Length: 368
Picture (cartoon, rainbow, N blue to C red):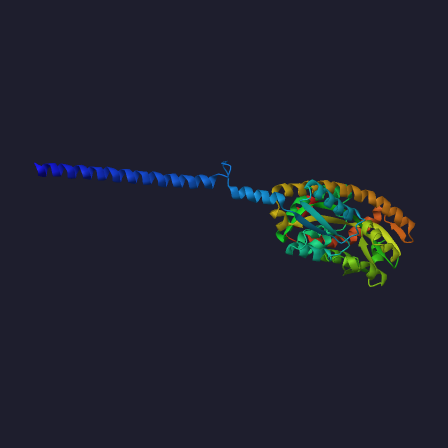
């Protein structure tokens, strides 16, 4: 009897132990799951309980507060349409971004030549420039198209091309060089000045030493006229003309008048033989690192200033002609027939350009 009762007691105790063990195991499992749930919830919610990553919110707040400085360097006078447009860009972007972007302007080759400024943009020490298209073939050969004689019939033609398919094709190519194109500005049609004689025919150019930019095609252009094309930095050109290191040069009226070349040159021929455009560009690394809203602001201001710059350049041309007429320089204006003679004399420059891969597509884009 006692043995049977003992066995019953032992059985009851074992059952109680098993039940207790199951209760403890179940409670532990529930606590573990609850703990994991708390961690997941914390990972997916901010401190106020809203869904979202708190660190991402902090990063966004940091971007909103961060200030950016753009160094905008160029090589021409601050009084030109290009120089004034650079200043206007700075004013408008600072206003539009409530001071989150400030712009420092360095005109008149203060930070070097166009080529040197572009190299500084690639290294990150300068953020913006509007270089003359004639220096860009050193970085992207296709930009030589701007160095073809009589490429555009007038400014409307130049505007349509640079703001159409041609501008898109060329803009994309500069990105490989670390430059993001924001637009094309107007520099005007180029004319010839010299200290030797009035130029009326291609034969008059033969034997002259004329300063050109670094573009090989521009040098070929004058070689076709039996003249010597000499590459000299724009900042050194006045001295080169004054000391007669070169006999003459080609530039639009904006550069002739702002740099006072009429003081050291005796003759100017309004030939309109070439077009000078500017490419408004920003360092691609700098641009891509900006928050989306600041990229949008830069794009919008660039478009607004671009339109203003073309209009201002047109107005300035009238004033430049007045100043030119008031100077002592002798002015020769070519007729349509005389311009045609120059165009025919430089036909071989087109032949050279057409040897480049992709030239046909670019030439077609000029008139689209």
